[in-house]
Image (cartoon, rainbow, N blue to C red; front, side, top):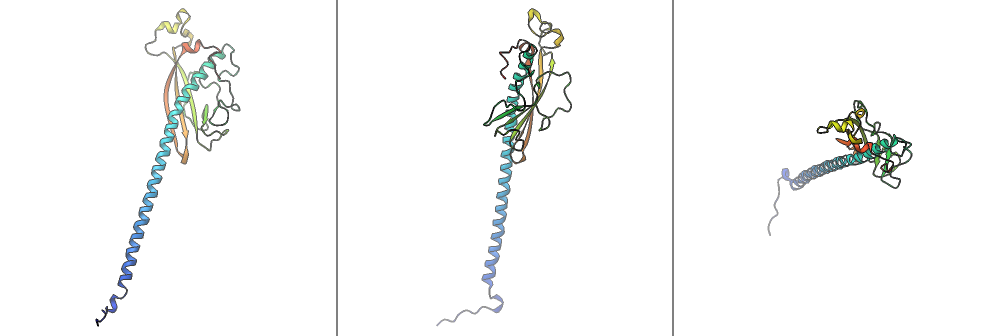
Length: 222
């Protein structure tokens, strides 16, 4: 018969201690890997939210241009008494796009009217806006996703425009009193999205005064 191996008293339980140490190291590695994965998921989620917010703000400029055009045309037509509101035929209690969503609300009836001096600083947010777009609907739901739009325009003489256009030859073009051939608009769009993301985009857009001066009630859609 073979005799069993007798370990010295100092080595008793060595395998158990080693196993516990290995398990502790693996646990620490697992926790670190999990935290890293969660951190990276948060980063990618925030990055996605901000990219979506920027895309929504950029798309808001297209909506801003369209509504600025409609507002300017309606405002021009109102000088002949075509619309009572001197702008788009809306107020804050009548949405441009009725529920269900999306919802567009106009707060400033004449935001496309050219001004002599633009307000400074010219900003756009929940307290400074002419139009609000709510993709998820909801009347005044500023706690959810929404896009704020603002704009201001100034009459200018565009490079390349002939003086006859300013003088209004043959009944066309703007009059000399108008002082220009186009309205240059500074447009702002701010989208407030998920996880408190926020993005603001600005652009310049010009509109022919000849088009505005020839506007009629049939051109005013809203």
